Image (tube, rainbow, N blue to C red; front, top):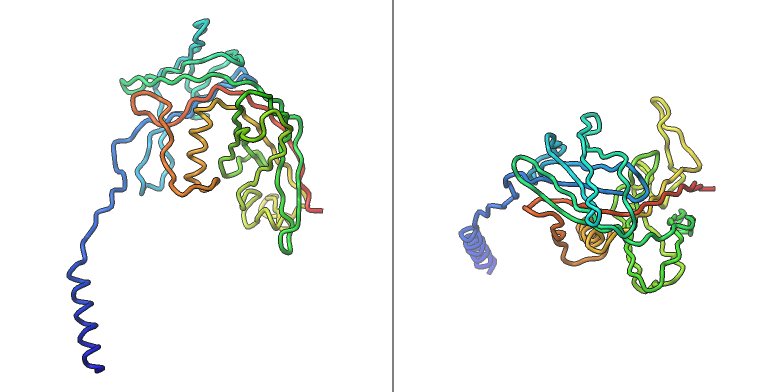
Length: 287
Protein backbone atom coordinates (compact mmCIF):
# COMPACT_ATOMS: atom_id res chain seq x y z
CA UNK A 1 0.00 0.00 0.00
CA UNK A 2 2.86 2.35 0.84
CA UNK A 3 4.52 1.58 -2.51
CA UNK A 4 1.27 2.36 -4.33
CA UNK A 5 0.97 5.70 -2.53
CA UNK A 6 4.60 6.52 -3.40
CA UNK A 7 4.04 5.72 -7.10
CA UNK A 8 0.87 7.85 -7.18
CA UNK A 9 2.76 10.77 -5.60
CA UNK A 10 5.48 10.56 -8.26
CA UNK A 11 2.86 10.51 -11.00
CA UNK A 12 1.14 13.63 -9.64
CA UNK A 13 4.46 15.50 -9.40
CA UNK A 14 5.29 14.50 -12.98
CA UNK A 15 1.97 15.83 -14.26
CA UNK A 16 2.36 19.09 -12.32
CA UNK A 17 5.87 19.66 -13.67
CA UNK A 18 4.83 18.87 -17.23
CA UNK A 19 2.08 21.56 -16.95
CA UNK A 20 4.46 24.24 -15.76
CA UNK A 21 4.48 27.28 -18.05
CA UNK A 22 6.86 30.22 -18.05
CA UNK A 23 4.90 33.47 -17.73
CA UNK A 24 6.46 36.73 -18.82
CA UNK A 25 5.35 39.56 -16.51
CA UNK A 26 4.91 42.93 -18.20
CA UNK A 27 6.65 45.46 -15.94
CA UNK A 28 5.35 48.37 -18.00
CA UNK A 29 8.64 49.15 -19.73
CA UNK A 30 7.10 51.70 -22.08
CA UNK A 31 8.37 54.95 -23.48
CA UNK A 32 8.58 57.48 -20.66
CA UNK A 33 5.61 59.82 -20.26
CA UNK A 34 5.60 63.37 -19.00
CA UNK A 35 4.48 63.62 -15.36
CA UNK A 36 3.09 67.02 -14.33
CA UNK A 37 2.55 68.34 -10.80
CA UNK A 38 1.02 71.81 -11.02
CA UNK A 39 -0.72 73.95 -8.40
CA UNK A 40 -1.95 77.55 -8.43
CA UNK A 41 -3.00 78.85 -5.05
CA UNK A 42 -5.44 81.66 -4.27
CA UNK A 43 -3.48 82.24 -1.03
CA UNK A 44 -0.16 82.95 -2.73
CA UNK A 45 1.29 85.04 -5.56
CA UNK A 46 3.96 82.42 -6.34
CA UNK A 47 3.10 79.15 -8.07
CA UNK A 48 5.04 76.05 -9.10
CA UNK A 49 5.06 73.33 -11.74
CA UNK A 50 7.25 70.21 -11.57
CA UNK A 51 7.91 68.17 -14.71
CA UNK A 52 9.49 64.71 -14.63
CA UNK A 53 9.62 61.68 -16.87
CA UNK A 54 7.98 58.45 -15.75
CA UNK A 55 10.30 55.54 -14.93
CA UNK A 56 9.94 51.80 -15.34
CA UNK A 57 8.45 49.67 -12.58
CA UNK A 58 11.76 48.02 -11.73
CA UNK A 59 13.91 51.19 -11.74
CA UNK A 60 15.01 52.34 -8.29
CA UNK A 61 15.94 55.89 -9.28
CA UNK A 62 14.59 59.39 -8.79
CA UNK A 63 12.41 60.41 -11.76
CA UNK A 64 14.46 62.71 -14.01
CA UNK A 65 13.53 66.41 -14.04
CA UNK A 66 12.38 67.77 -17.40
CA UNK A 67 13.76 71.22 -18.25
CA UNK A 68 13.43 73.29 -21.41
CA UNK A 69 9.63 73.32 -21.48
CA UNK A 70 7.47 76.37 -22.14
CA UNK A 71 4.68 76.81 -19.61
CA UNK A 72 1.94 79.45 -19.62
CA UNK A 73 -1.26 79.94 -17.65
CA UNK A 74 -4.37 81.87 -18.67
CA UNK A 75 -7.36 83.02 -16.64
CA UNK A 76 -10.23 82.04 -18.93
CA UNK A 77 -12.52 85.07 -18.50
CA UNK A 78 -9.95 87.88 -18.48
CA UNK A 79 -7.25 86.19 -20.59
CA UNK A 80 -4.69 87.24 -17.97
CA UNK A 81 -1.57 85.30 -18.98
CA UNK A 82 1.44 84.32 -16.90
CA UNK A 83 4.67 82.68 -18.07
CA UNK A 84 6.72 80.32 -15.91
CA UNK A 85 10.52 80.26 -15.76
CA UNK A 86 12.67 77.26 -14.82
CA UNK A 87 14.59 77.44 -11.54
CA UNK A 88 17.48 74.96 -11.84
CA UNK A 89 18.21 75.06 -8.11
CA UNK A 90 14.65 74.10 -7.19
CA UNK A 91 14.17 71.81 -10.17
CA UNK A 92 10.80 73.50 -10.72
CA UNK A 93 9.10 76.03 -12.96
CA UNK A 94 8.12 79.18 -11.06
CA UNK A 95 5.52 81.89 -11.70
CA UNK A 96 5.64 85.00 -9.50
CA UNK A 97 3.30 87.96 -8.93
CA UNK A 98 0.30 86.17 -10.45
CA UNK A 99 -3.01 86.65 -8.65
CA UNK A 100 -5.36 83.66 -8.54
CA UNK A 101 -8.96 84.34 -7.51
CA UNK A 102 -11.61 82.14 -5.95
CA UNK A 103 -14.24 81.02 -8.46
CA UNK A 104 -12.09 81.68 -11.54
CA UNK A 105 -11.03 79.03 -14.07
CA UNK A 106 -7.42 78.71 -15.22
CA UNK A 107 -5.94 76.89 -18.20
CA UNK A 108 -2.38 75.57 -18.07
CA UNK A 109 -0.46 74.92 -21.30
CA UNK A 110 2.84 73.03 -21.39
CA UNK A 111 4.96 72.57 -24.51
CA UNK A 112 7.71 69.97 -24.08
CA UNK A 113 9.66 68.01 -26.69
CA UNK A 114 7.37 69.20 -29.46
CA UNK A 115 4.15 68.12 -27.71
CA UNK A 116 1.47 70.31 -26.16
CA UNK A 117 -0.35 69.36 -22.96
CA UNK A 118 -3.28 71.30 -21.50
CA UNK A 119 -5.51 71.13 -18.44
CA UNK A 120 -7.97 73.47 -16.74
CA UNK A 121 -9.01 73.90 -13.13
CA UNK A 122 -11.42 76.14 -11.19
CA UNK A 123 -10.67 77.54 -7.73
CA UNK A 124 -13.42 76.19 -5.44
CA UNK A 125 -15.25 77.94 -2.61
CA UNK A 126 -12.93 78.66 0.31
CA UNK A 127 -13.77 76.95 3.58
CA UNK A 128 -12.19 78.54 6.65
CA UNK A 129 -9.96 76.33 8.77
CA UNK A 130 -11.07 77.51 12.21
CA UNK A 131 -8.57 75.62 14.34
CA UNK A 132 -6.74 72.33 14.82
CA UNK A 133 -6.81 70.11 17.87
CA UNK A 134 -5.28 66.81 18.92
CA UNK A 135 -7.36 63.96 20.33
CA UNK A 136 -5.55 61.21 22.21
CA UNK A 137 -6.87 57.97 23.64
CA UNK A 138 -5.38 54.75 25.02
CA UNK A 139 -4.50 52.03 22.54
CA UNK A 140 -3.11 49.07 24.45
CA UNK A 141 -0.19 50.20 26.60
CA UNK A 142 0.37 53.38 24.56
CA UNK A 143 -1.52 56.51 23.53
CA UNK A 144 -2.88 57.01 20.03
CA UNK A 145 -3.06 60.53 18.58
CA UNK A 146 -5.31 61.89 15.85
CA UNK A 147 -5.40 65.39 14.38
CA UNK A 148 -8.78 67.12 13.99
CA UNK A 149 -9.04 70.15 11.63
CA UNK A 150 -12.18 72.03 12.71
CA UNK A 151 -14.20 73.91 10.11
CA UNK A 152 -17.82 74.82 9.44
CA UNK A 153 -18.86 73.21 6.16
CA UNK A 154 -20.92 75.60 3.96
CA UNK A 155 -24.55 74.55 3.52
CA UNK A 156 -25.62 73.41 0.06
CA UNK A 157 -22.13 73.38 -1.48
CA UNK A 158 -20.14 70.22 -2.22
CA UNK A 159 -16.69 70.59 -0.69
CA UNK A 160 -13.54 68.53 -1.14
CA UNK A 161 -10.35 68.69 0.88
CA UNK A 162 -6.78 67.47 0.96
CA UNK A 163 -4.65 67.71 4.11
CA UNK A 164 -0.86 67.95 3.98
CA UNK A 165 1.00 67.20 7.21
CA UNK A 166 4.59 68.17 7.94
CA UNK A 167 6.98 67.50 10.77
CA UNK A 168 10.32 69.32 10.93
CA UNK A 169 9.37 70.92 7.60
CA UNK A 170 9.27 67.47 5.96
CA UNK A 171 6.07 66.15 4.46
CA UNK A 172 4.48 63.27 6.31
CA UNK A 173 3.94 60.20 4.19
CA UNK A 174 0.42 59.57 2.93
CA UNK A 175 -2.46 61.15 0.99
CA UNK A 176 -5.27 62.46 3.19
CA UNK A 177 -8.45 63.55 1.40
CA UNK A 178 -12.03 64.10 2.58
CA UNK A 179 -15.38 65.20 1.22
CA UNK A 180 -18.40 66.64 3.07
CA UNK A 181 -20.67 63.65 2.51
CA UNK A 182 -23.04 63.52 5.48
CA UNK A 183 -21.51 66.70 6.93
CA UNK A 184 -23.06 69.39 4.71
CA UNK A 185 -23.57 72.60 6.66
CA UNK A 186 -22.16 71.17 9.89
CA UNK A 187 -19.19 71.74 12.16
CA UNK A 188 -16.75 69.10 10.95
CA UNK A 189 -14.83 67.15 13.58
CA UNK A 190 -13.58 64.38 11.33
CA UNK A 191 -10.08 63.26 12.42
CA UNK A 192 -7.01 62.59 10.30
CA UNK A 193 -5.18 59.35 11.02
CA UNK A 194 -1.56 59.78 9.88
CA UNK A 195 0.57 56.93 8.64
CA UNK A 196 1.86 54.79 11.52
CA UNK A 197 5.42 56.01 10.85
CA UNK A 198 4.39 59.64 10.44
CA UNK A 199 6.34 60.98 13.36
CA UNK A 200 9.81 59.80 12.52
CA UNK A 201 11.95 56.67 12.07
CA UNK A 202 11.59 53.83 14.58
CA UNK A 203 8.43 55.37 16.03
CA UNK A 204 4.72 54.86 15.59
CA UNK A 205 1.82 57.14 16.26
CA UNK A 206 0.91 54.83 19.16
CA UNK A 207 4.30 55.01 20.90
CA UNK A 208 5.23 58.66 21.08
CA UNK A 209 7.56 58.05 24.00
CA UNK A 210 10.08 57.18 21.27
CA UNK A 211 10.00 60.56 19.53
CA UNK A 212 13.49 61.49 18.43
CA UNK A 213 15.16 64.56 17.00
CA UNK A 214 18.55 64.60 15.32
CA UNK A 215 20.96 66.94 17.12
CA UNK A 216 24.38 66.83 15.51
CA UNK A 217 25.35 63.18 15.27
CA UNK A 218 23.01 62.05 18.05
CA UNK A 219 19.31 61.34 18.47
CA UNK A 220 17.73 63.09 21.44
CA UNK A 221 14.37 62.14 22.90
CA UNK A 222 11.73 64.87 23.02
CA UNK A 223 8.39 65.04 24.79
CA UNK A 224 6.58 67.06 22.11
CA UNK A 225 6.71 67.65 18.37
CA UNK A 226 5.47 70.46 16.12
CA UNK A 227 3.16 69.37 13.30
CA UNK A 228 2.13 71.70 10.46
CA UNK A 229 -1.25 71.13 8.80
CA UNK A 230 -2.29 72.60 5.46
CA UNK A 231 -5.95 72.31 4.41
CA UNK A 232 -6.45 72.57 0.66
CA UNK A 233 -9.89 73.09 -0.88
CA UNK A 234 -10.02 71.18 -4.18
CA UNK A 235 -12.47 70.92 -7.03
CA UNK A 236 -14.19 67.58 -7.55
CA UNK A 237 -12.04 66.17 -10.38
CA UNK A 238 -8.79 66.93 -8.52
CA UNK A 239 -10.23 65.38 -5.36
CA UNK A 240 -11.12 62.22 -7.32
CA UNK A 241 -7.55 62.08 -8.67
CA UNK A 242 -6.00 62.14 -5.18
CA UNK A 243 -8.69 59.88 -3.73
CA UNK A 244 -7.81 57.24 -6.33
CA UNK A 245 -4.13 57.59 -5.47
CA UNK A 246 -4.96 57.18 -1.79
CA UNK A 247 -6.76 53.93 -2.59
CA UNK A 248 -3.69 52.62 -4.35
CA UNK A 249 -1.48 53.58 -1.40
CA UNK A 250 -3.77 51.95 1.13
CA UNK A 251 -4.95 55.16 2.84
CA UNK A 252 -8.60 54.29 2.16
CA UNK A 253 -10.63 51.09 2.09
CA UNK A 254 -10.82 49.63 -1.42
CA UNK A 255 -10.96 46.18 -2.95
CA UNK A 256 -9.96 47.19 -6.47
CA UNK A 257 -7.42 50.04 -6.81
CA UNK A 258 -7.40 51.78 -10.18
CA UNK A 259 -5.61 54.46 -12.17
CA UNK A 260 -6.68 58.10 -11.71
CA UNK A 261 -8.70 59.75 -14.47
CA UNK A 262 -6.38 61.74 -16.76
CA UNK A 263 -6.45 65.49 -16.13
CA UNK A 264 -4.11 66.48 -19.00
CA UNK A 265 -4.49 66.08 -22.75
CA UNK A 266 -2.08 64.21 -25.01
CA UNK A 267 -1.30 61.38 -22.61
CA UNK A 268 0.52 63.29 -19.88
CA UNK A 269 0.27 62.00 -16.32
CA UNK A 270 -0.25 64.06 -13.18
CA UNK A 271 -2.53 66.88 -12.08
CA UNK A 272 -3.27 70.60 -12.24
CA UNK A 273 -5.07 72.03 -9.21
CA UNK A 274 -6.38 75.56 -8.77
CA UNK A 275 -7.09 75.69 -5.05
CA UNK A 276 -7.07 77.51 -1.74
CA UNK A 277 -4.73 76.60 1.11
CA UNK A 278 -4.65 77.50 4.80
CA UNK A 279 -2.01 76.46 7.33
CA UNK A 280 -2.05 75.87 11.06
CA UNK A 281 0.53 74.45 13.47
CA UNK A 282 0.08 72.49 16.67
CA UNK A 283 2.30 70.84 19.28
CA UNK A 284 1.61 67.21 20.10
CA UNK A 285 2.84 66.26 23.55
CA UNK A 286 3.19 62.82 25.11
CA UNK A 287 2.77 64.24 28.61
